[in-house]
Image (tube, rainbow, N blue to C red; front, side):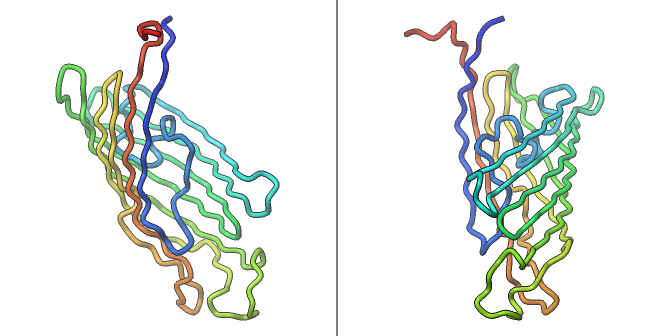
Length: 208
C-alpha cells in the first residue's frame, strides 16, 4: 500500500455575530458534511464520522464540541443523503443541531464530479444565566433561554476527484435572533461562508 500525504488548505470566512456562531473545528477534512451538504454521498459508500473537540482545558466555560454524522449515496443514483448531530458548548451557552442533507452529483470529466447540496437544520439553543455575573441583577437582557427552537437552511457545492477537492458552502442562510421572554435579542446568529480545498500527494513520488 502506498503511503500518502494528505495536504489540504482550508479557509473559512465568518461574518461576525454578536455572541453566537457555528461550531468551529481545527480540521474540516473528515467532517465536511457538517458545513457542506454537497459532500453527502461523495465518497461513494456509507460514511460514518464522530468527533470530539475541546479547547483551553481547565478553564470554566471552555469550548467543547461533539458531532456525529452519517452520509451515503442512494443506491446507484446521483443522489446522496446525510444526517448529522452537533452539540456545541461555550461559556453559558449549549446548542444542539440536527441537520439533514441532500446532494445531487454530475460527472464533469473523466476524473472530476460536481455536487450540489441543500441542508435543513433544527436548532435548540440554551443559555444558563447562572454562569454569568451581570452587573445589574434582573436586567431584561440577561435571562435564561431554554430550548429555543429555530430552523435554518443552507446550501453548498463540492467539486472533487480521488486526488483533489474544493468546496463552497453557506450552511445557515437565515440570521436567527435569540429572544428571551421580553423579546429582547441578546444573541444573533450571522451567516457563515466556508471555502475549502485540498490535494492528495503520493509520498513515494515526491523528490527530496
